[in-house]
Image 1 (cartoon, helix red, strand yellow):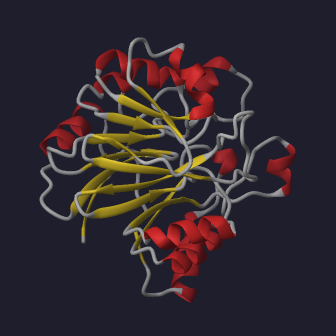
Image 2 (cartoon, rainbow, N blue to C red):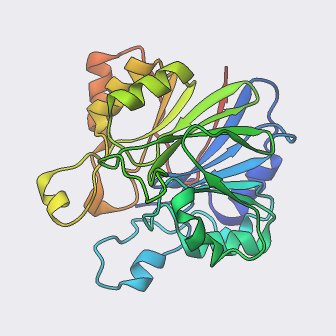
Length: 282
């Protein structure tokens, strides 16, 4: 991949200098499923699924999961962060190297699926960890966060009945956002998100196939399903995720754009590049 839109100190300067007024939110693409959200100064700064290292390939040099581009920021730069949300335990979503560094430099609250809290506690000393559970809303500064189950590719629970895979319904500054985490489309997901009616939805579009599944790569909704899902639940703006970082687990985003053009020509969407900022105003 070519030049990153913005990265490092330049990106963090933009984050700090961005000022948001009423009924708006800004967000930055960190690659894969990583998103950085900012509301007003009172709302704070929230990060979802930060994979900001090369830990996967460093731990396993034989892995096929090789980053197509470097991290847009070092996790140690996130000193102003108020919170981190993790959707599930796969290494490109729960990157313990990133989590540990963020906890070292900031006072972030960590919203972690309940089943993963013991793992994270080993790496985050004396920090505020919130055990995220289905339907139990909590706040990180000005962000109201409601976890809902995700099916990756099935709904799974631990021995205590806690969902292993989560998505998050997020309300901030009059804007409703949905970050699905890794999931396929299910009737339950449609019903829950339809009631929420998000202005913005961050949805995976990498799909799945026999050959990836045979290698242990767990799939998600594909580009057509993401578009159909968004229409079914009433999303205003679709922001595709989970298609840019790993060449072995991609779907061409042009398929998504073409399908929208053919089926939903009035649907708003935005394809983000790593390091790019988007400001959404209702």
